[in-house]
Image (cartoon, rainbow, N blue to C red; front, side, top):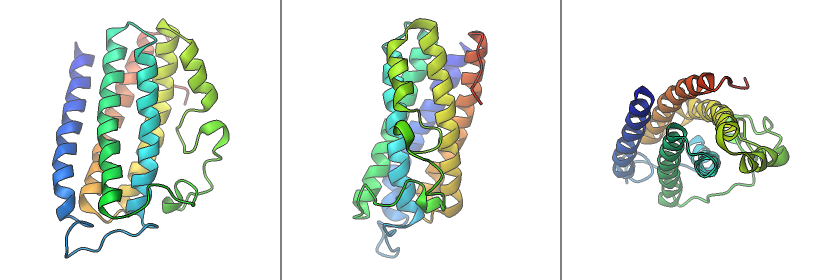
Length: 209
Protein backbone atom coordinates (compact mmCIF):
# COMPACT_ATOMS: atom_id res chain seq x y z
CA UNK A 1 0.00 0.00 0.00
CA UNK A 2 2.86 2.38 0.78
CA UNK A 3 4.34 1.88 -2.69
CA UNK A 4 0.97 2.47 -4.33
CA UNK A 5 0.51 5.70 -2.38
CA UNK A 6 3.99 6.92 -3.30
CA UNK A 7 3.45 6.16 -6.99
CA UNK A 8 0.01 7.75 -7.11
CA UNK A 9 1.18 10.80 -5.18
CA UNK A 10 4.20 11.38 -7.40
CA UNK A 11 2.16 10.95 -10.56
CA UNK A 12 -0.62 13.25 -9.40
CA UNK A 13 1.85 15.94 -8.36
CA UNK A 14 3.68 15.74 -11.67
CA UNK A 15 0.49 15.92 -13.74
CA UNK A 16 -0.97 18.84 -11.78
CA UNK A 17 2.32 20.70 -12.13
CA UNK A 18 2.42 19.86 -15.81
CA UNK A 19 -1.02 21.33 -16.36
CA UNK A 20 -0.11 24.52 -14.54
CA UNK A 21 3.12 24.86 -16.49
CA UNK A 22 1.33 24.36 -19.81
CA UNK A 23 -0.86 27.38 -19.11
CA UNK A 24 1.98 29.46 -17.69
CA UNK A 25 4.60 29.03 -20.40
CA UNK A 26 3.06 31.54 -22.78
CA UNK A 27 3.55 34.20 -20.11
CA UNK A 28 7.05 33.26 -19.04
CA UNK A 29 9.61 33.42 -21.81
CA UNK A 30 9.04 32.69 -25.45
CA UNK A 31 5.33 33.40 -25.39
CA UNK A 32 5.29 36.93 -24.06
CA UNK A 33 5.81 39.98 -26.21
CA UNK A 34 8.17 41.25 -23.51
CA UNK A 35 10.44 38.18 -23.59
CA UNK A 36 12.45 37.00 -26.58
CA UNK A 37 11.89 33.40 -27.60
CA UNK A 38 14.76 30.97 -26.96
CA UNK A 39 17.05 30.34 -29.91
CA UNK A 40 17.64 26.96 -31.55
CA UNK A 41 21.02 26.58 -29.85
CA UNK A 42 19.81 27.66 -26.40
CA UNK A 43 19.75 25.41 -23.36
CA UNK A 44 15.95 25.79 -23.28
CA UNK A 45 15.55 24.37 -26.78
CA UNK A 46 18.27 21.75 -26.31
CA UNK A 47 16.72 20.44 -23.11
CA UNK A 48 13.25 20.33 -24.68
CA UNK A 49 14.51 18.36 -27.70
CA UNK A 50 16.72 15.94 -25.78
CA UNK A 51 14.34 15.28 -22.91
CA UNK A 52 11.50 14.60 -25.36
CA UNK A 53 13.63 11.83 -26.88
CA UNK A 54 14.70 10.57 -23.45
CA UNK A 55 11.09 10.49 -22.23
CA UNK A 56 9.92 8.62 -25.31
CA UNK A 57 12.13 5.66 -24.42
CA UNK A 58 10.83 5.63 -20.84
CA UNK A 59 7.29 5.45 -22.20
CA UNK A 60 8.30 2.61 -24.52
CA UNK A 61 9.96 0.60 -21.73
CA UNK A 62 6.97 1.10 -19.47
CA UNK A 63 4.52 -0.26 -22.01
CA UNK A 64 6.79 -3.23 -22.71
CA UNK A 65 6.92 -4.32 -19.06
CA UNK A 66 3.24 -3.68 -18.56
CA UNK A 67 2.59 -6.45 -21.07
CA UNK A 68 5.31 -8.75 -19.69
CA UNK A 69 4.16 -9.04 -16.07
CA UNK A 70 0.97 -9.43 -14.07
CA UNK A 71 2.45 -7.86 -10.93
CA UNK A 72 0.14 -5.04 -9.90
CA UNK A 73 2.85 -2.91 -8.26
CA UNK A 74 5.14 -2.96 -11.30
CA UNK A 75 2.28 -2.42 -13.75
CA UNK A 76 1.08 0.57 -11.72
CA UNK A 77 4.54 2.11 -11.64
CA UNK A 78 4.99 1.52 -15.38
CA UNK A 79 1.61 3.08 -16.15
CA UNK A 80 2.30 6.15 -14.04
CA UNK A 81 5.75 6.66 -15.57
CA UNK A 82 4.30 6.31 -19.07
CA UNK A 83 1.46 8.75 -18.44
CA UNK A 84 3.60 11.35 -16.66
CA UNK A 85 6.44 11.31 -19.16
CA UNK A 86 4.16 11.24 -22.20
CA UNK A 87 2.42 14.33 -20.81
CA UNK A 88 5.73 16.08 -20.16
CA UNK A 89 7.02 15.10 -23.60
CA UNK A 90 3.99 16.73 -25.19
CA UNK A 91 4.69 19.90 -23.26
CA UNK A 92 8.34 19.99 -24.32
CA UNK A 93 7.46 19.52 -27.99
CA UNK A 94 4.67 22.08 -27.64
CA UNK A 95 7.12 24.65 -26.34
CA UNK A 96 9.34 24.11 -29.37
CA UNK A 97 6.31 24.77 -31.57
CA UNK A 98 5.48 27.86 -29.50
CA UNK A 99 9.03 29.11 -30.00
CA UNK A 100 8.96 28.24 -33.74
CA UNK A 101 11.98 26.00 -33.30
CA UNK A 102 12.79 22.65 -34.92
CA UNK A 103 12.28 19.45 -32.95
CA UNK A 104 15.56 17.98 -34.21
CA UNK A 105 19.10 19.32 -34.36
CA UNK A 106 22.20 18.51 -36.36
CA UNK A 107 24.22 18.86 -33.14
CA UNK A 108 24.85 15.78 -30.98
CA UNK A 109 22.54 15.29 -27.99
CA UNK A 110 23.50 17.26 -24.87
CA UNK A 111 25.52 19.82 -26.84
CA UNK A 112 23.54 22.48 -24.95
CA UNK A 113 25.18 21.15 -21.75
CA UNK A 114 28.66 21.27 -23.28
CA UNK A 115 28.61 17.47 -23.31
CA UNK A 116 27.94 16.66 -26.95
CA UNK A 117 30.67 14.03 -26.96
CA UNK A 118 29.53 12.25 -23.78
CA UNK A 119 27.22 9.62 -25.30
CA UNK A 120 28.50 7.46 -28.12
CA UNK A 121 25.02 6.62 -29.38
CA UNK A 122 26.17 3.01 -29.65
CA UNK A 123 23.34 0.51 -30.07
CA UNK A 124 20.69 3.22 -29.79
CA UNK A 125 21.73 4.70 -26.42
CA UNK A 126 21.71 8.32 -27.56
CA UNK A 127 22.12 9.85 -24.10
CA UNK A 128 23.42 8.74 -20.69
CA UNK A 129 21.01 6.43 -18.92
CA UNK A 130 19.21 5.36 -22.06
CA UNK A 131 18.81 1.64 -22.68
CA UNK A 132 20.44 0.08 -25.72
CA UNK A 133 18.47 -1.59 -28.49
CA UNK A 134 19.86 -4.92 -27.28
CA UNK A 135 18.53 -4.30 -23.77
CA UNK A 136 15.09 -3.38 -25.08
CA UNK A 137 14.98 -6.53 -27.19
CA UNK A 138 15.92 -8.57 -24.12
CA UNK A 139 13.16 -6.93 -22.07
CA UNK A 140 10.72 -7.95 -24.79
CA UNK A 141 11.73 -11.60 -24.41
CA UNK A 142 11.36 -11.81 -20.62
CA UNK A 143 8.26 -12.21 -18.49
CA UNK A 144 7.35 -12.23 -14.83
CA UNK A 145 10.03 -11.54 -12.24
CA UNK A 146 12.99 -11.43 -14.70
CA UNK A 147 11.16 -8.79 -16.75
CA UNK A 148 10.35 -6.82 -13.61
CA UNK A 149 13.96 -6.83 -12.43
CA UNK A 150 15.39 -5.77 -15.80
CA UNK A 151 12.78 -3.04 -16.18
CA UNK A 152 13.49 -1.64 -12.71
CA UNK A 153 17.23 -1.69 -13.40
CA UNK A 154 16.88 -0.06 -16.81
CA UNK A 155 14.46 2.57 -15.51
CA UNK A 156 16.73 3.36 -12.56
CA UNK A 157 19.59 4.03 -14.99
CA UNK A 158 17.21 6.00 -17.19
CA UNK A 159 16.05 8.18 -14.31
CA UNK A 160 19.65 8.86 -13.24
CA UNK A 161 20.46 10.07 -16.74
CA UNK A 162 17.29 12.16 -16.82
CA UNK A 163 18.10 13.77 -13.49
CA UNK A 164 21.54 14.73 -14.82
CA UNK A 165 19.94 16.44 -17.82
CA UNK A 166 17.31 18.15 -15.66
CA UNK A 167 20.06 19.50 -13.41
CA UNK A 168 21.61 21.02 -16.53
CA UNK A 169 18.37 22.80 -17.37
CA UNK A 170 17.92 24.10 -13.84
CA UNK A 171 21.39 25.60 -14.15
CA UNK A 172 21.32 26.80 -17.77
CA UNK A 173 17.74 27.29 -18.96
CA UNK A 174 16.30 30.79 -18.94
CA UNK A 175 12.56 30.14 -19.23
CA UNK A 176 11.23 30.03 -15.68
CA UNK A 177 8.49 27.43 -16.17
CA UNK A 178 10.89 25.10 -17.96
CA UNK A 179 13.36 25.37 -15.09
CA UNK A 180 10.54 24.56 -12.67
CA UNK A 181 9.49 21.57 -14.74
CA UNK A 182 13.09 20.33 -14.72
CA UNK A 183 13.24 20.69 -10.94
CA UNK A 184 9.97 18.79 -10.63
CA UNK A 185 11.40 16.00 -12.80
CA UNK A 186 14.43 15.76 -10.54
CA UNK A 187 12.33 15.53 -7.39
CA UNK A 188 9.86 12.98 -8.77
CA UNK A 189 12.45 10.76 -10.40
CA UNK A 190 14.67 10.73 -7.33
CA UNK A 191 11.67 9.54 -5.33
CA UNK A 192 10.98 6.85 -7.91
CA UNK A 193 14.61 5.71 -7.84
CA UNK A 194 14.26 5.02 -4.11
CA UNK A 195 10.96 3.23 -4.69
CA UNK A 196 12.53 1.07 -7.42
CA UNK A 197 15.48 0.25 -5.14
CA UNK A 198 12.98 -1.10 -2.61
CA UNK A 199 11.17 -3.05 -5.32
CA UNK A 200 14.44 -4.54 -6.54
CA UNK A 201 15.38 -5.53 -2.99
CA UNK A 202 12.04 -7.30 -2.62
CA UNK A 203 13.02 -9.33 -5.69
CA UNK A 204 16.50 -10.17 -4.46
CA UNK A 205 18.16 -7.76 -6.88
CA UNK A 206 19.65 -4.28 -6.92
CA UNK A 207 20.41 -1.41 -9.28
CA UNK A 208 23.23 -1.94 -11.74
CA UNK A 209 25.15 1.14 -10.60
